[in-house]
Image (cartoon, rainbow, N blue to C red):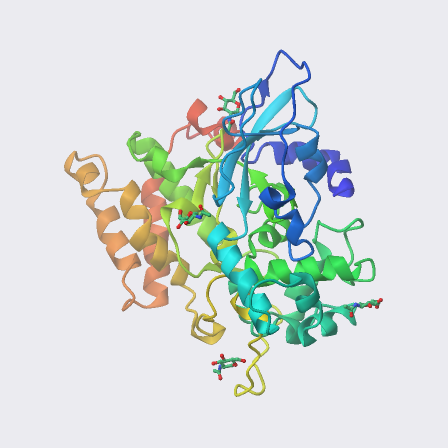
Length: 421
Ligand SMILES: *[C@@H]1O[C@H](CO)[C@@H](O)[C@H](O)[C@H]1NC(C)=O
Ligand SMILES: *[C@@H]1O[C@H](CO)[C@@H](O)[C@H](O)[C@H]1NC(C)=O
Ligand SMILES: *[C@@H]1O[C@H](CO)[C@@H](O)[C@H](O)[C@H]1NC(C)=O
Ligand SMILES: *[C@@H]1O[C@H](CO)[C@@H](O)[C@H](O)[C@H]1NC(C)=O
């Protein structure tokens, strides 16, 4: 964590991503504090939690939850999955962030109960003691390398066919330990290992944001850290806020979403990141108009370089108490069955038709071809090749509708230096 903040250059580039325009607060007078309870944060459940990297900031008032209204400070209900907030690191500028639990509070409660039941305890138990006693944790605790065998049977989409290179990247980029940057877990305490395993089992969101950071060009919002079972990342405007806006803005959004999806599929790291499901709510927009994937929990990953390691004994049952903590024990289809066109088919069916409609064609601004290629792109009976071609036609057709003005700050300097504008 400390080392990430010391990367001043990366930090400045990080500001461009999803942080929005900083707000200048003119009155920095001290304010009476929130009283975060350990159970609100989920700290009482640590080390069956994500981490503690932003706890100090919460207690030092550097994070103000929605409804922040001195002098009386009311914490929002603890029965919610996510909260909007403002965050400062210099006590002058405030930026929108999201604080989110790994799963809904109800789901956390059910999962905690299932942990106790797995140990034959009906009512309550020490969750941590039960998890530490599992063979899965014992194997991890005795190893300096995160191995495929240690994540088998977890339902997390990115772990469907993990290569050693992928698991090494998880460890290498893991931000919740004091000393990040090694693919070996020598600097991990057994507490760190339990937190990592718990996060891997429940929700990959914080790990994806750490592995593929925005300041390296990945389309994910900046990860700020965690406290207990709450994690925090940069806030964005929801995609749906664009629906009533101009065709130029909606075309730009559709173009960006296609472009993001392409860059996830083929990139210099040779990891194929694909969507296992999509919804409009998984995309967000930063202040400068750049689009992001704010829900990374549905991203699957195939290693195009090392290939995937096919399970040798398909009969073996790797299910254990960690396998169902996310609310489902169902593993998705195997990586062999994932088509290269899957992500495009999903966005062409469920997301892009909300941005580009036949009304735009009727008002004769949008070429009819956009709608017909959207239909091809979303059709599972089409070949991968034809779907990729539809994507290219869509992008070529949408490109001229995108504009260079202050609504699209993210396009500079591209806009400034292109003679098309
Ligand atoms: C963040 O601060 C701005 C400006 O003070 C305010 O309008 C907004 O409601 C705040 N957001 C939250 C989630 O509190
Ligand atoms: C929390 O919210 C869920 C659904 O919103 C509800 O079913 C549940 O009863 C609530 N739990 C508590 C303790 O209020
Ligand atoms: C984990 O490993 C450490 C050192 O290798 C050991 O001290 C500790 O007892 C182990 N914890 C469990 C729960 O096995
Ligand atoms: C694997 O084992 C778990 C319990 O250990 C059981 O609930 C599940 O049905 C088994 N799955 C298969 C495919 O055998």
